[in-house]
Figure 1 (cartoon, rainbow, N blue to C red):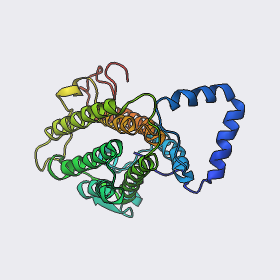
Figure 2: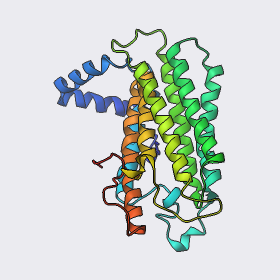
Figure 3: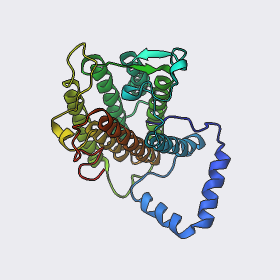
Figure 4: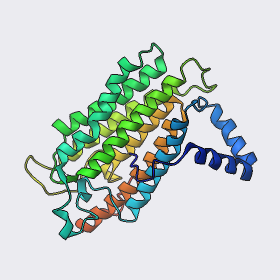
Length: 299
């Protein structure tokens, strides 16, 4: 998730100047890295906006992940009332978690669905990307309506941030792919690997969301330590599979923006999973020490 606390008025000239300085400081390393990437990725599109947002999105996500580790949380799920002083909590606009998550996912789903009419194309790669993104957000809406059992609220500003992030990233991924139509394909084909990663990610994410929903009966608001699947090894396997899913988008696309967005998403979800594990440890004395945050046996 990208949360644009980073200023969006950064100029494209500033980004260009940043890259120029990097090239002057590390000419061999940067050149070698670009040569490697060119074997896997389409060249950057002729759009200053897309190139700017590639930097802004990944930076904002990384900063959000670091903030999660440092205890400053986006206010949803277990952390819906974090960072809010008790005297001010009544002044903060809130939504039920269910409606907040619907607000978060619906605009991105509509953008994905509309892209089939706005960017009609017989190109297999862009069709796969549009289909994967649209299916991802359709699944999230389905889970909100029929799978998840919510017990908390969601700060309205957080819901708007997440919604804007998902919507904008979906639009940019599809638009970037549209701009690359007709260009020579990257020498190394990753599209089929991307399809596999996407399918593994979306199935694993759904399965562990289902297991999470089974820890609470209808009407209950208490939390339990989830069990089954990879919950025996990590407390946030649904985040792990979401990361896999986003790298599926990146591999299907083979564009720089989805790749950077996926890396940023990984950093954010790593920070969020670290905070989640810390929360479970504080709430449950019997929390198993061997259960990690995101990666089995590692982190």
